[in-house]
Amino acid sequence: MASLQVVAGEHSSPLQAGGNDQRLLILRLAALLAQFGPDRADAALERLRYPNAVRQTVKALLEALDVGDDLPRLVFAKLGRERAELFVSLVHALGYRDAGLCAKELAEIERRKMPFSPSELAIGGKDVCAALGIAPSPKVGEILRGLWLKCVTDPGLNTRKRLLDELAKGDYL
Image (cartoon, rainbow, N blue to C red; front, top):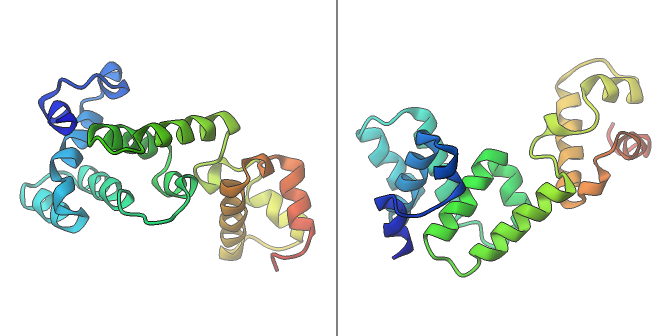
């Protein structure tokens, strides 16, 4: 019943309060198409000529519904900040038992300031190059991604000092 409320527009959510029509459309489409799975939903949206951004977001949300034993933090990190908020609304709309847990986990992530991407780390590529004495290269991006994944499991690691200390351990070359 909850998913019908979202599709019909009766569900009060932060999405409606924000007035962002595309976010609400994405949430409604994901709720409506969840039963078909990510690939079939994407194919249907492609046939209906929805924009790629809408299709990709709906597909990502539906893929996140079937993550198995992944940590919620890792699921949210893969989705990104905006999609993670949509995911919590989708889980709630679909009436999943763990909707409250998802919302609490996302609130905890926000409170602990977990980075949702490598670009949100307390250090950047120049810092990595300086700390390791290397030139800019794709390896720097790989190192930042590795640090980011560590910060996903331990958000407290995302400080300049702790990340530079992590680099100094020498596990990155």
